[in-house]
Length: 261
Length: 289
Image 1 (cartoon, rainbow over the protein chains, first blue to last red):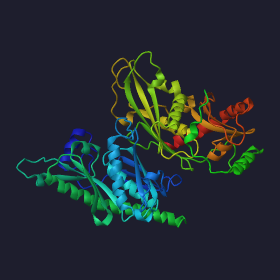
Image 2 (image 1 turned 45 degrees about the horizontal axis):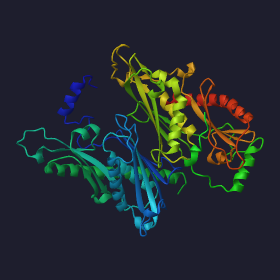
Image 3 (image 1 turned 180 degrees about the horizontal axis):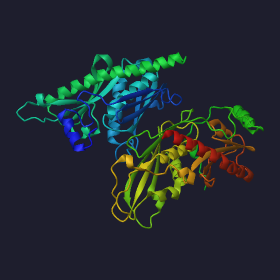
Image 4 (image 1 turned 120 degrees about the vertical axis):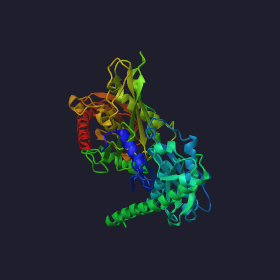
């Protein structure tokens, strides 16, 4: 351990490490759990990306709560996202009508309506509720992964895992003579501090196909940096898919051992 | 305290038929009574508790009940300038969010005010910083699933555990200066010192009690509440003082209302049961550290 924090930070830049000591392509500690609330919902999960923590519960396919939500040829997918008041650094109550929350809801709803085989459950509704308990960057990615696990736990047919991942790009530290392409340094799985400083995007891919089903970026960035970020994120998705698969298989083995299957 | 007009309207109705309700009512009125889950009258359902689960809060806890009730409490503190002549109870702000319900859901509002009332002045007195400043404590409660049984006990136990593992940064400046804190989180001081229980200064808990005939049941399930003559939420302190009493709802089987004698019996029984509850909470906290 280095006692002097200034020395520690300069050492990090010397070794090309990030502020939390990771390399550019390293994920934060990933932890996931299935069936966290077996009694309350059909499917539930909890996902942690570093200090970001999201809990998901899935109910359905069930009868629609409002007739207007009924689709005669497929199931409708409803997503609810709530941010706990204590989830951020400062305490802040976010209402459900908050624009950002609404946007996240719509994005998730659209992504999962595609991935779920909704035609198998016509005239029914699948309700996904997500609670963000702690946010430290990559909240949308954590929500996507939690939803995937929740849906698997609920036994809802999907074409493949939908895996979310965020990536950023460190700004050019070298001289202006170098082109953006060479200077751009993609960073995988950005945390809260990096999110505040650097341009970043969130990608969701559909399992082994590497097909992008969701892509969102809100920062201004040079076109040449985009490609690197995207490549890093898709690569991270592939890595994370294996980790999710491991979690699901371990849970399945446990359930089988307990004699539920 | 005044009775509240059916605050548990948000909890799901029981699927039992009138005949089944009547059967349940008579089995609960037997001596000794028979509860559907074969618990003793003063026995609680088993629960799972976790402490200090969220890194971004000053203190947090999670309690899960086997019927699916899950509650997460996060406590955050901010420094606030003291205003004279202001009620010190405003230093604690409680908010409850029930999943799937609207932000102004009557159940959430009722639960928030009942938790706030229970903690009251005693907690607010702990939040002094020097002469001109004080902590403002935000207690945010998240009910992750729409409640199956009434969540008053669940909430109160979770808040108790959350407060007990709350740490606040250590003050390094003098009492009359503007506050300056130690930035080492390891040096933070607990809001309730580890010997708080021996001194008897810990937050009160709320117990739910149902009365059927002459019999009294602690921690009633939804079905038991549906047939009870009266349901009371009793808040007890460590030393056995009753700090709050509310009627919640009466069942549908009898015509409602109970005699004074029953209320007296409930209050008397709450004291020893409360002691037991505090003892087991102490066990959870000891195991958590």
